[in-house]
Length: 270
Image 1 (spheres, rainbow, N blue to C red):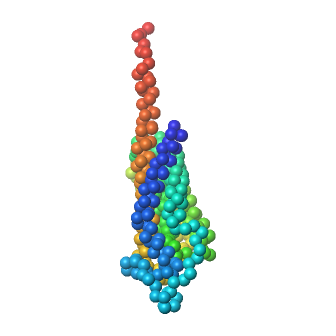
Image 2 (image 1 turned 90 degrees about the horizontal axis):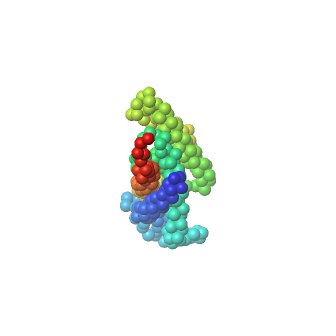
Image 3 (image 1 turned 90 degrees about the vertical axis):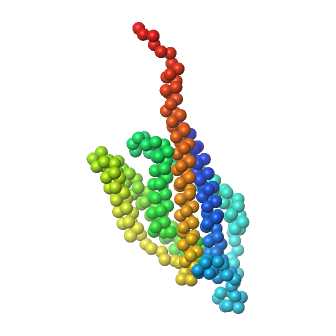
């Protein structure tokens, strides 16, 4: 059973990742190109509309500068590199998702597979994406200093671990309080505990302000919205698609003994 769920999770993850990459290509890639143009100095960026403008070759520091050589070309990044990363990323996410689903199934009450998959996907998006992004949002190229890459990465993963731990703690507390307080009150108490733990840690972790003063705010905003939108597509498709696949697998397994029992010879009495 676990192997069948794992296979379905990996398949759903690959499909979800492909759709998420398609979303990112439509809405995020233009902002990346504008940020690269800003970083390399080959053009200015219209702060109001986000369009790249040609730099004046006689404008001193605004003139084009010699770009650094690319280790991996943009064509490769958007082609075979993106395809390979999408398949690996989606399969890994889907496999982990199916393991979490399998652990929760039957342990969080009588919840149908489709509903449970949506709940797990919602919790995953909240803990893995939204909470860390509130403290350390995604940044396009041209933002960030080399000396802060290490501390920022460590702080981000600390926030991620705390978010997952707070989510697990909230679920355990909510299940324990459900008998005494009821489902709604227990859920509210668990949610308040999650928010309290996350907010406390976010206040304690350091801040990193690395956005250049002249970087166009519209490009930054659209890039971060696209990054969140990509993750939202990923988790939504993963939860909905895996829920349907898991329900077929689990419902079929539950019905199988009943079918065999109906074929067994009935006793005619003593």
